[in-house]
Length: 507
Image: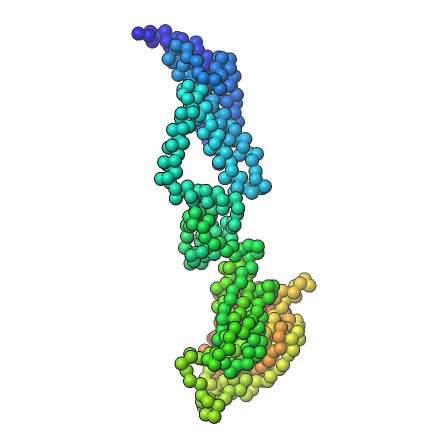
């Protein structure tokens, strides 16, 4: 039997045993002292690796040569542990250098994937080196055995490996990036949140998280809506009464597109007559928005504007195909409405009025016609009437520091001039016609009795003005922004309307 005291005495005299003990204690202290300092911990590891290399060389232990047995079990075990530690430390050092210096064209995501691949290969090489130089086993047989195991695992993990390699292809080819809006074949549409080795996370328009395997994406058609720019095209169809001349309808649809600020000017929208039948005339409208997220809002707003522009012109949408149109000899009885009455019907503020009330107001309206590019209101002018838009598109522009900023676009059913009418303040903006326009003017003396007799109209006007002021669409005055809290705007406008009653009665 081996004498234990003699063995311990020999172990203490062995410098490698002492080095192993010191490295073990130093490693624990380093982990405890430098937990929050990764850079310091890395420097200490490099110092340990250098000291370990020196200790092994001085003891005639070469890391890249098979381990020579000394006959002392404890000494041989210590040498084996130190060689294993050296190879793992060397692999860690090489991987650290690669992570610091391997950069692929300033593309951090691809660099990270490449670094991970190289790191795996380095550690795998270190494992084979340990098997060969520490345990003195033939690597060739191990590689052959591991190849067979790899084939079995590859068959078992075929789907996962397919996702993995598809992820590599997608990350390097980059058909999309996090933040891009994409359409995938099969109906998945949304914004890319994350790309990893296995799947792509897509946030859909319904705010659901769709996790799509990379292998599925690699086999499907990908439409990157955000590339080469974020501009997204939308196509809608509109069917109008077949008795509507296509040229007239096309002009009105163009005005509705011009009225919608969410529709970008370039690429320019198009209106195409798709078909003409006895039942309807079908138009195809293609327009563009700045990004896919605005598509729904732009489409809804455009449909509303189309309805208003058609209504202001007295045109109708197509009726169901089973409806029989009245003949020209026996037309259906229909009470004719003036253009002013039609314009008032589109104004949401006057929705509570009866047809008779609107007819009475229409009789008091004064029409004004403007050509494209003509200025209706200039800064400094005090508006003393309510102006209702019957047709055309107007632009509200504020000039700040010699830079024109468009605040809003107005179309049929909109109105302006009410804030100057209520406060007596001069206009701070310019109102310009973007297309030929017809405007009806309702004087203060005619408006005040209506608001006094119809409290619901007064309340609706106050609410609409408060919303417009919050959105920055007011045509005057700076007084509101500085003195009236947002939650008090409706009541503030109501007070101003009551003041209008008094002024009108005094006049």
